[in-house]
Amino acid sequence: MYSTLRYTLESNGTTYENDSINASLLVDLITNLELQDYVVLAPSELVEGSMYMQAAALEEPGQMVAEIRLQEGEDGFRHYGYKTTDPTAIIQWFLDYWGKQQLPQLESWQDITHEFD
Image (cartoon, rainbow, N blue to C red; front, side, top):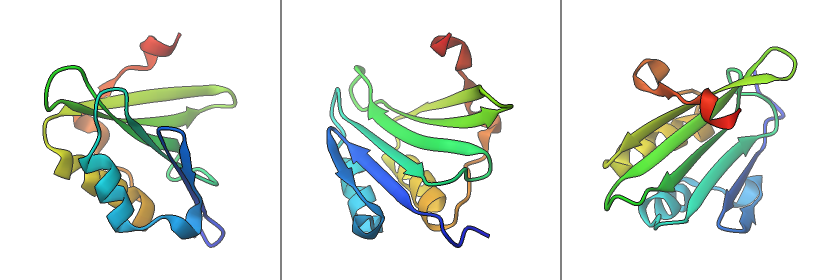
């Protein structure tokens, strides 16, 4: 299905190309997120309509957010976010997105598209 799919991972100004990305790198980067830190995982082609997945630390101690952007139509998008204190959930979503080309179940995520208008 995604025979030519490649990923780029960016974290705080450092870019990792496809061959440098592995599960332990994803776990390490997400586990050690601090305020102003981010991790963005972008596929070379849409994965189930998604353009990228990202995670960041929030101001509240222990709070993190995962976000995903889905293409909608020619130029539009929907953007969803999920706040949590559980980094293992975010790690699992990233591993599934990278390893299985599978999106999280977005029913419990918030549609925050309006924040980007």
